[in-house]
Image: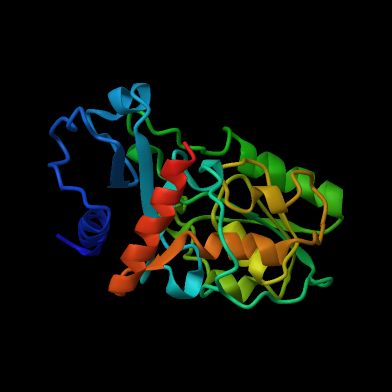
Length: 253
């Protein structure tokens, strides 16, 4: 049934749980519910009302291993997730590049979420209507340099050419602006000053919400915490580590 089903299956087993069909009611004695993006399960509202620990799985945070890893968010999505204490154990993550001070363009990054995928019980933090165009104009005024919109490859307007790989745009980008996209992780790691305007993004607390280029301290602690929520799909030991992370969160609820 695919890699994502396998991740849910292996993590559920690591937690000592059992699989239930997606379209069937969740057992009333459920303490922890694990799913890939929690889309549309009929028991969602009841689980929220009963205080069930909800675990949302998604693709990896770091671009070079995005499709080989999965992320864990507990009782919230990405930046909204519960803060779980982590220790000093080092986990794989990208090397942080020095903050950039050059570049001649502002990049406005659209979200990758598709409104057609919205489901009951899932808050999809799309940017407000007109945000892309209005932010482009405001950014040009604020920075005094041209701004362009980078549309998500799956959300291209008609006749819009496919954009180049995201990392190829970093050299020319003076500042990257997004509403809630996880691409802010890539730009922050690459040293591109980044604006994030919605707390759903995992980089929100590290970035400014204003249209200005900031280079904050604290990236090392930030990426360390993210690395403790990012797990290898193919390594059996990683499922035990992910289960331990979830149980640590559960014990603090």
